[in-house]
Length: 421
Ligand SMILES: Cc1cc2nc3c(=O)[nH]c(=O)nc-3n(C[C@H](O)[C@H](O)[C@H](O)COP(=O)(O)OP(=O)(O)OC[C@H]3O[C@@H](n4cnc5c(N)ncnc54)[C@H](O)[C@@H]3O)c2cc1C
Image 1 (tube, rainbow, N blue to C red):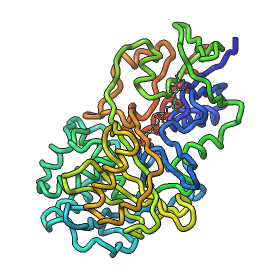
Image 2 (image 1 turned 180 degrees about the horizontal axis):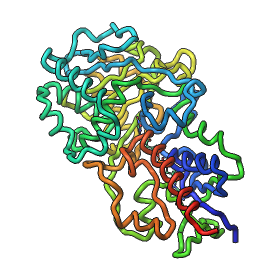
Image 3 (image 1 turned 135 degrees about the vertical axis):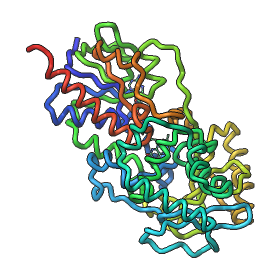
């Protein structure tokens, strides 16, 4: 039986970051990834000449942990316009970032969304968040849901419904705004302190860059872990067994629970993303367009090739349409419904938009109504040398996953240093 100091189960950005940090500490580890390639939820498919991220993603350049781990220039990040365009049901309005240095898209956005009183509140919120550290946000004793938090700031219902619900819907994957206010503060701080971006080669470039720092023989793909015994013997789907001194579960939480023999199915938000192609896009700028009308199923759309031209072949355009939750209709019906909804936004030209692909993602993001430390029952696993690692351990997003990977590697190294020789 193969013996390893550390086995990492799962090759999303959390597991990869953990591996990279163990590599830097010369620890003998092996990363096992169940699917055919690493990346986890950060995957990009090359499809008929288009780059299709598995669900719409934006990387926020201000993410503090991720920026330590990633080389931005090599990622060739391409930026969205730093603001959003909002469909009100009648027209498009713009919500601008006053500190934005990119030209404002003129095309269809004719006026500003917010009333002066809401703009003053946004500027004040921004100042408060700029002066708070991430630790202060995370460790604050009281947490509430985001809707409560925004109401406490006095934002108008119009501002909440037209801007915050659809905007935060893209980040939280829910628009009731029941997600933790601490998470809102963190993400809004990130939004104000940097840019929204995608790598030119697709979102999967992020895990691929972390993978490039690991020796090939440290990572095994198509290696699904099916069980972990009391004495940390890890069994794979092909029957192989590996004896580990420490096991790091870097899967999502439902998978981690399954491997630990727990029957709980922790709640997750779901999302559906449809891609279509078109010859001429109604917007030529790198904008994120939110549905602030309160009607229809679409949360947001964007034209990724206007952010990074590599997303579509020459002469073609790509539109990404995100719907919160799982849209269960068959492909044909779903595309018809999307086109029908978008006809209200863009007129008859949408009948020429041609379907490409649909992604339905069940475990997109863990529900995080409050940011709490990992429960003691799970922490107790550490005494058995099993560690949990993944976005759900922090404020769930790319940054949280990377932070969790780094922290668990530090913890494992520390525990190893305490062992008698
Ligand atoms: C559609 C979508 C849009 C998103 N948008 C954003 C965004 O704009 N900005 C942002 O910051 N975040 C976004 N996120 C969240 C972000 O993608 C995740 O927080 C992050 O990728 C989670 O990484 P992870 O390593 O914790 O988990 P995962 O990426 O889920 O990795 C877990 C890995 O474990 C593997 N695995 C599972 N079970 C086993 C097993 N038994 N044996 C071996 N391997 C196993 C899986 O195959 C997977 O590779 C989005 C997520 C989705 C789905």
